[in-house]
Image (cartoon, rainbow over all chains, first blue to last red; front, side, top):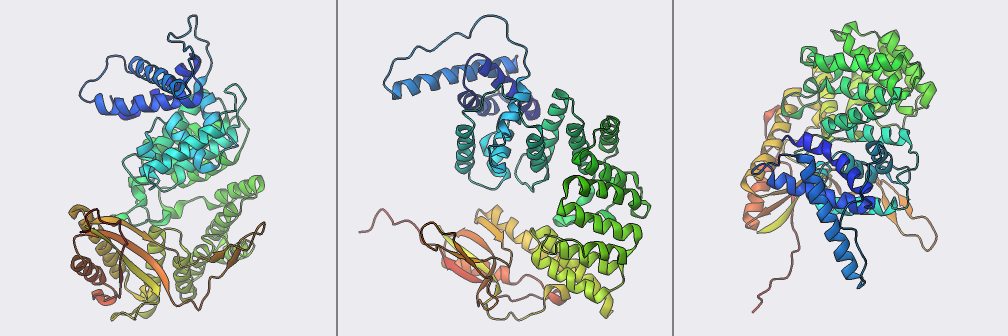
Length: 381
Length: 135
């Protein structure tokens, strides 16, 4: 069985244990242990009924955990060995799990970790590796998060906006390790979109698909960053683009616009252009206007200034940029780009070099220093 | 085995032989440099000597406790600070000699004109755990 299919079973199995009366924290621990065991033993000895195996093993594990807990406390407490009889209530446990793991009371980093484990079905080791922290650190982060939400009832309505923010974070953070978190983010967002009918969920899914489509074109040899303008668009994944556009159009037709749909619309306009020069910047600026009006986001304002530079020329872009907080990350990089576009190459080179010093990651830093070097070379040669 | 820290400085190390700021190199020279650094790390991973490598942003601040019930004091960054660390690599090797050999190799990374930078790297041994047998 593929690991992604195994992962998809995890929230369901947690749901079964919780319905049988287990508390969320213990159920989640027990299922995690069953998952680790499954990854170890299934390749050599695959079960016929994967979900049945996971339920049996994790329920047994849950009972063991309960027993040892009671033994530690030196009391005799009867534990229900048999699951309660009767019909299983038809509730959408998966959706509740999303709300719980991304509960507004959790700090974002903890919500990300807990969502990846309970909803995404990843092991603590995989999550730790992806975030470059020791496994024990990640284990603690998850335990603390579970203690924090122990009081929250699974029946409380959740906050969808927080869930979307957490999924967006998972997709958008830089990651490493054996598990591709961007793909996982898409998988769990798809799962969410199937469980809840909401245009913003669809908008986020479309946004992820449309950006994921550019993935192969985004990095060159040795992990070198390739900016949108220079990407080989024949390497964009047309199937992902088609799906993203379809999901987005269905969402937009509902006429309940939100920030993720607006961002996806911008990505879709980029996807429409076969060449960078064919980009419909006028429409893109309109979507940024929409985004700024909705969110007041400084980052949206910054990106809007660059789009204005493309739509109405570099001077207009620089004028728009002058209205944006200069302390913003990437402000200097945007300024460098617009100066280059305006033909002020010496200034642009200085700005690129300054932007490289302010970069928050080595790939961006190397990209910016290369731009500076290229302009200086052109100026001297 | 013993762990060593190879420290790279923005400021504070003696000037390298090939001392040209990176934005004045040719773009291909930057590519060659980045590739050299990646190959070096990969090679150490393969030999089982690599532990960690990180780059640091040049900006930061000094912070200190300012007494009960008061927020910490945040100061800087200080332009006059003599020593500014740019990044590090932690290696786990058999000897000081091996650490020096590797630091020398890292310092040979190509720079302007495709020539080695001869950058000064600081090599610092980690303090370890006390040995079990001491007599």
